[in-house]
Image (cartoon, rainbow, N blue to C red):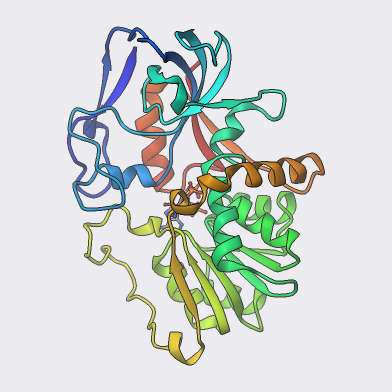
Length: 335
Ligand code: NDP
């Protein structure tokens, strides 16, 4: 069993030495357990937070512990009648090639409904995040202006497309011409903005009447440019601020622009709300999945995955994702 352990806590951006690849015996399933061979593991920005020993909504990974993640795999051996060899399952299996889990903790996946990897992306936690955040906080109405940052990524691509389905005008912000072309031409957003260019000028052109809903994935310079453009009664869905994840908690990122002046929150009656998908998302997973499968079958939702190969390449893929090198939902296939 190959495993990637957290060797030490990263100082700033993670480096290869923060991780250690080890070989351990494949574990045996006890009564009621299932041995799962992982096929895809999910790399997600929240895993950077798990590397820091700070108080959060979830405990950090211990030094020497297996890095946490969601994964999909196939049952290799089962001591429970609910699962047979070959069945596809989803669970929090970690950066490793096999794991043993209680059968009752696994979610079965039907590979005929959609490719199993989608259970980690468009039909999984990132898709659910987009759905919950729009349903509960963003609530874009027909004709309103929705701006989505990290728009080509796992959460952003779904948030923007669900906004279009609700009838909003949707502008995506992404890094580079290729991602912007994908956001506009493939995902069907109304416009795409390259955050490496002049944000103010591009936002003025794309959102001349201001912004009703901002889906925040990145923070930093993008947030500073978007914020003054809110219309009255705007909503800011605080999903994440990836540009700051390598910064010590509470510190300002090196070279970051001063944050936006939040004063207009009052004058404009803005609503800024953070959320964690696990708070209210998973109990509604069935409803989400049914709706999304409908959209996918009707061709209303597209998605893009970025697949690295081999567990040994997970740290590099993770480090790249924090710098925008991923193009779509970042996965690692354990071929
Ligand atoms: P993505 O697939 O969007 O990958 C991360 C992307 O962030 C990169 O590709 C890059 O895109 C962008 N990025 C990185 N650094 C910067 C920067 N300095 N400035 C601007 N953009 C940057 O990841 P996810 O879709 O999985 O996650 C998106 C956000 O959602 C994260 O903040 C994450 O923490 C959050 N999240 C929150 C959840 C919740 O429950 N609240 C659940 C899941 C995710 P580009 O090249 O376009 O810049």
